[in-house]
Figure 1 (spheres, rainbow, N blue to C red):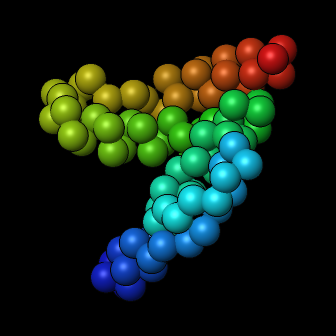
Figure 2 (figure 1 turned 180 degrees about the horizontal axis):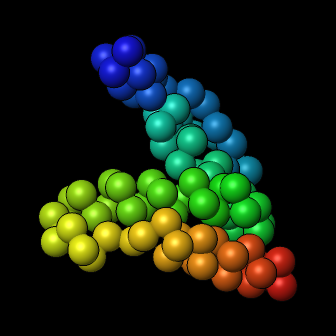
Length: 88
């Protein structure tokens, strides 16, 4: 399953961004979509983005385990983003 998922996410697709057609991986398209939805105030997308950031960005930095965001921290940030993204 992991191999299949990695292969599928690495496949290229065409997207239109800023009126221009670009080729990106499915993984890049997914990340762009989640970020765009979070910026529009989508609470689920904000939560997904926070989880991705906590998992993947923190893993790259190799922090101490107690430096990771707790579920409560993520909920607070997601609520903040949802409230403030609606204002824009």
